[in-house]
Length: 180
Image 1 (cartoon, rainbow, N blue to C red):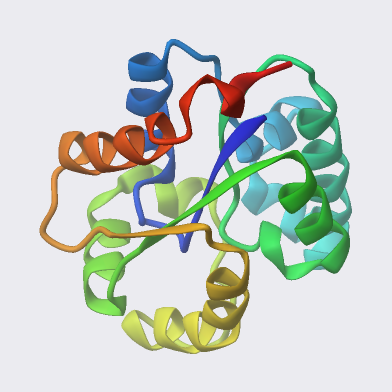
Image 2: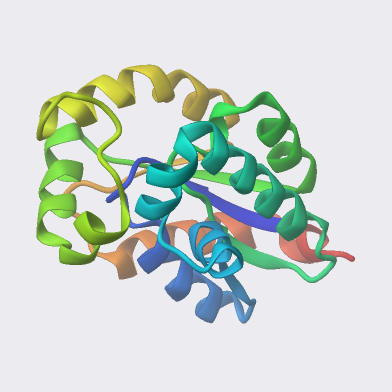
């Protein structure tokens, strides 16, 4: 089984995922990095050349590939990976799902403070700033809620605190979670 971390951009999926994987002694996989590595370009470049449908096709292929791996892992999903029903089925059938849930204001503040985000990730709407976050979250939150087995509130919390909460939840299942 995989532990999937989902949530909006800036929710801490990559940072928390790396720390959680280390704590659980599992490999860490970031699906956005899998996509960029396979394409040889950034997500921004993929969006510019292939549009969102092209990116989502690549994302679905990457997710299916990661889910098919038999080794247990902690997987950071792209924020929109949950948009396709096929992806939702893949996620639910191959792992446990944690939603890193932050307020639009906190998410936007994290996005703004991460210089790499602007270079690697495209703007998703014609809205600017926090308005884009609010708009996209309104569409995605119902899906996040549906898929989440565990919701972790991220505002004003350290990555270590989030990892401790998630690790405790994972460990509450005992070893059967990781039976291969």
